[in-house]
Length: 261
Length: 118
Image (cartoon, rainbow over all chains, first blue to last red):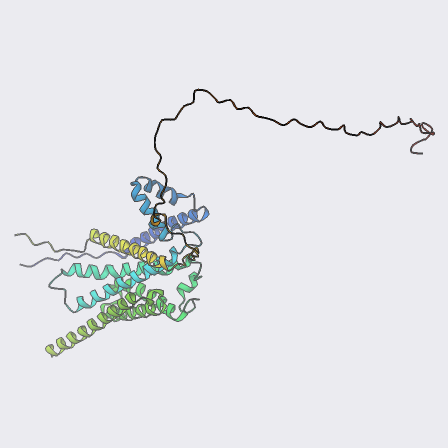
């Protein structure tokens, strides 16, 4: 029995239309977010966000409201000038982005080593490998952008674009900037791999190892949480796991090549 | 014979993973805030009062008189007491000054002849 695979060629016009629509949608969302932010900054006590959150909180039980307000206060909310919330968000999103990137890298190596092929269906494996780097990059972008609001570090948008010029640990922060740009480039390369060709894409995709190493160094050297033994242990374990899996991948590849020969 | 449907990483799965990620991030934010909380400078301890006063619970009870309820002895009438007050000695008259003589009325000589402002 043969399976007929139906294929169709999408015209470039449709691609361009979708890209333009996506950009427009992104601009509208960014504009709305910006307007909400300006509205909040103009009057932190009385604005759309406060009114909406008060309405939502008003509908939950009193006991939950007490817990909610207490936790929000500890977490540095509301976002005033002297709040530590920006710093907390930057640290949390940074560590979380690192863990997501680690998982994406681990997933990629296990996927290419065919370790998961018997356990998980291939489309799910590919889907996870495609989705986790995007999530990691979103959190990494949040990690960088949120620092613009921190009054202590005094970052500006130029420091986030050009590496090695930031006022806080320029070398190690610069490695993080390069890693973020590399991650964005790797995600984009995935969607244009048909145009670039599989060989070029594959060669470029190996840079994901470099991105992971840069993020690891950035986290260890620039992260203020690296002083904690738990975080140090996390970096050590994740780094060693990638090293081990890479070695395993190279070993299996060599074994396979020998067998073919 | 129907073909087995192959599982896919669907949009719902993506939304679930994204929601879990956001929850993890907020949880991390909360955890960091809680870890930072004790490291904030604590208020200086209050100086110990010297000499210290023992807590009330540790002080043994002081023996006190027990009130007894008993009927009050009522008197029918007040007992009259005669008070002997010594007589007040007569005071001598206070010396006074003689009354002042009448003052003569003196009229100014040029009264009415002065021209003010000239």
